Image (spheres, one colour):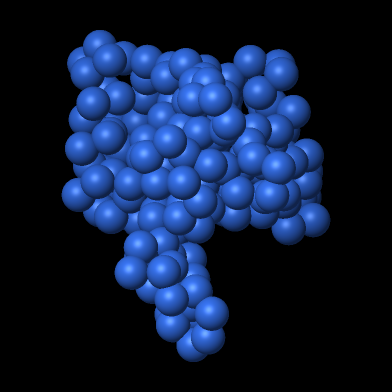
Length: 178
């Protein structure tokens, strides 16, 4: 087992290999839990003192030992974004969103291969902007939903999250003057 800092560096490298852009981490506390929806797909989301995550017909259980959220983003093509109006925008948007499930699944298996759990709440399981801001990936802008990053602006299509028991060094929030 590596240190939390080494684990974060490993995750950052793997996410970039799989197609992600930025990577950040948050330690889960009671306030952070408020950004995870209490229900996903009609099932209650609860935290319990169990070793392994499990799901029943009525609930999804997050083990209390899963103390970290790993955030990542996938950029929208800058060239397609420059031609935002019309059919090319559809391609850029589609490609960005179509990558999320694939990269998330690949990374879940990567973490599982290291001997840890990685829970994927899906795009509707959490509030992405506050978590991304807490993870230091950007700031919440006034244009409603996107997290604006200092490196890529609004060309991040969305932020994604995995809940894990792999110890990670939290990345602090940033203020780049937005």
